[in-house]
Image (cartoon, rainbow, N blue to C red; front, side, top):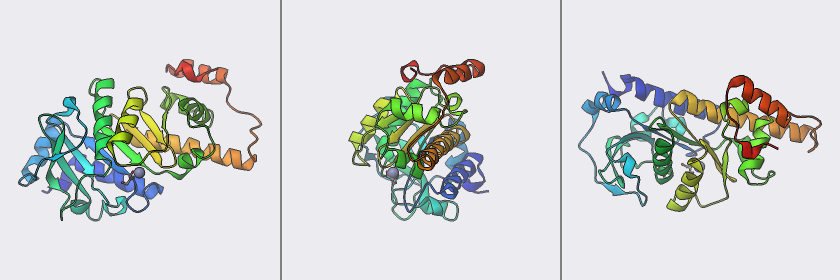
Length: 274
Ligand code: 2HA
Ligand code: ZN
């Protein structure tokens, strides 16, 4: 028996490998954090080592005090998670103020949690509050098509949401609340963490201009599925704009969107409909 026999650890590693296989994680691009359930922490605890030092995060989330997170490592490659998990991922514990972490498993050889841990942490804090504790996963990736749209669409939630909803019929069902858009910002710090978490009070996904996408959800399937659906819609949008040289001959109308919402019992963000 090893920690890699524990279901949640297996699923976490599988999601990293899935993201790599999609081509969303060149080099050390992207990061994944998972807020563990109490029983998952207990299953993993026998494999914990003497905890490391507390490291202050520069951001705080009191509602995450005492939580444990699975996290990818700073500078680590998604490509290496499956073959070398001990060096590529780890588990961190959060202190009782919700402003510092310490490593209890993995991240061997002096590795640290992802450079975007402050962003992930703030987003977990906001999404836990927004979803009554349902949200457990924050996933950041660099899918090429959604990034490419940040060069040609206005950087607003309305423009991105409408373009994506109209690019594939299932989209309004998968993300009826729409997507937020963060303007270009320096990655890795508290500023982008705060800007993203402001948007995540409202949305479960946020585009980072000229950089990538942040998605949140209750489990790996839903969160990976959200990333996948948004990127697929972005790909269709890019292909249609390219094939038509910018001219769209016909599309899904706003009344069509309303009809989908009615049939599937979802409430679309009215701000994004005409
Ligand atoms: O981990 O994706 O945003 C590398 C990144 C930073
Ligand atoms: Zn990134």
